[in-house]
Amino acid sequence: MVAVAGVYAIRDRATGKMYVGSSTDIYRRFSEHRIQLRRNQHHCIHLQRAWNSAGEGAFVFAILQTCVRADLLRLEQQYIDSGIRKGNIYNVAAVAARHQTGYGKRVLIQRKGNTLTRKTVITKRR
Image 1 (cartoon, rainbow, N blue to C red):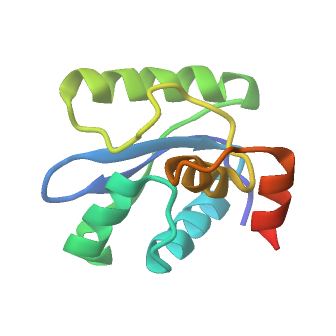
Image 2: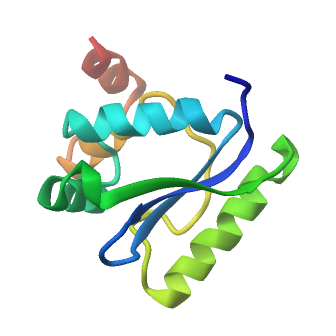
Image 3: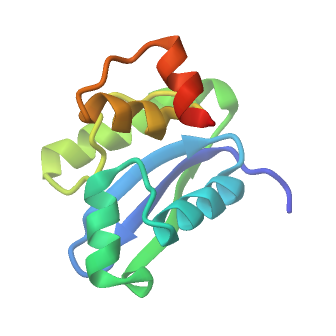
């Protein structure tokens, strides 16, 4: 499948609440989200809880807008801001950021009150 860059949403059909993200390969990112959600390992705890409660069938994965790579974060931020104003967003962070491997692990370490150091991240990855 050809890589499609743009902004996407994972939307709860019943509530209309959504998680917004952006990617240079949306279909690959959809697959990553599904895997994390099915394993109860998604970095967005609010989305994970809703998924666990309502089930996979209650959510739809949708492309909101395609764009060039340079516009990804700006457009994602516009959708996040709109969701915040409407009060229907799962995103924990109110600022769009580039997806980074290991981000969820770092957030979990911080939530547990551990000091986040390079050594901690490397140790937790093993």
